[in-house]
Image: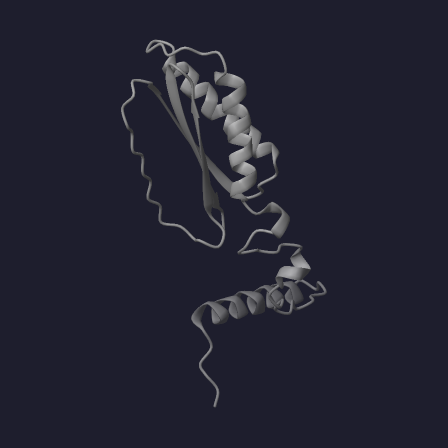
Length: 161
């Protein structure tokens, strides 16, 4: 049982036929183009991966170590000052993000959150909730403390599909 041709297919056939008729009336040689089959992903060179390669996966242990190294280097002798903390927080988050980008997490969106507070002997609770794919997305965090301040840094890696 044959189905009726789609309207856009008929329109294309009519335009090709009228073009061929006009060209043959003018005495030109005309080759009728054949419809091209759709190209597969392998023939175009494009491959869409829904999962990262194993060596490019966001590994929490490696990320935590990177965060720890950056916090230790940058905050080793720093004393808490409410005027300086906004710039230090921004510099820390940018340095952690840049360090993680150099590690080669391809097609990952890296989000870094840094919180610095004064050390007064009080407790602090932090929480984060995310809606993500547990197979590809992850996070890591580390805490730095000295006599005058505490710093909590968290890095989230979300894979782009």
